[in-house]
Length: 389
Image (cartoon, rainbow, N blue to C red; front, side):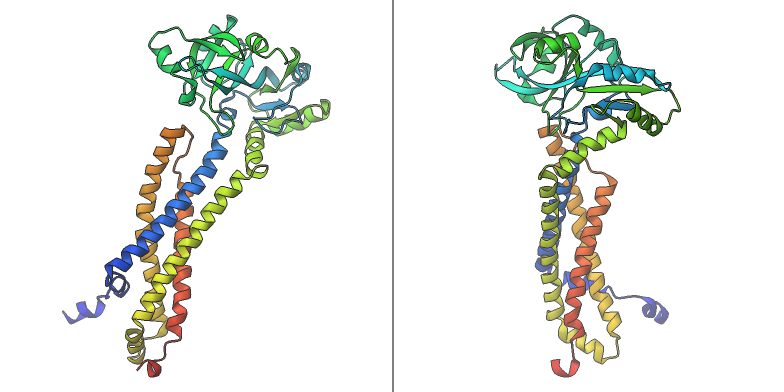
């Protein structure tokens, strides 16, 4: 029995924290709030980057040809279609798809209000998306004036998907011209486009007569299996004039992300918001731990006088920080999941919890609590039993 009590450790850190439940609740609420703020700010930032390349990721392509004057998906410039045809001279190129890309005005068929929508025009016989079912849907676009509507578009475009699935004929206007919805696709909105539609190049040029017939905004290039995209990019860059730019599929995706990351203030604002949440949490945890150490300073001093090493007592404060980090993180994580679901349902943006962000926020909360504990330890280091008593 004596050996049992000798080996049993007293949970001193937990007892000190739970001695004043209200103070513990305030501390956990502060940590949870800071965690939620970091989750939301980082989630919005990453969701922005992911949403900006929703369509980019769906293209059936290995390389992308575009104008060097293009800044992003919301500012695409045209280039001669013949440049894309010239790439077919390369031995590793097995197929191409010219694509027109522009924003046009869509009229809500229910409320008759207009809203900008991203329109993609291509030859229906060419591959465009990786979805195996898309080729069948694209056949309907051979009829002029037919479009495929993105069923993930925001509700402001009208109940198009609902009406179409009910078997109703859905007709509306795009850029002032009559079109009929011939099918549905699932692409998803982005920060640049609230909705999308796909049509044939013939219909696209009819909807956007200012677009030259020999001009396209992007060109999709498919390579032979086992070809090295980087090598082909280098070869095509040397052989083509400088009025076009050749990118790999991943570079095309990063091109769009970099625009939102570096050329706009949105990424900086969300990162700053996460940093502010971190600072707020640090202040709250520091105040709680500093007050706890100050209130129990006589007890700590007594333990020092009894022969306990300072290192042992510092470990108690450190364990308090770890306990606060764990208990504050769990409700923050659960709240973050719920808020992400709310944002997805309200905006249809791909804001999701991933393991990297979950680990990052926990690490930040742990650093926040341990850093605050380290600062609070200075009060304990200065404790002198002779002065206290």
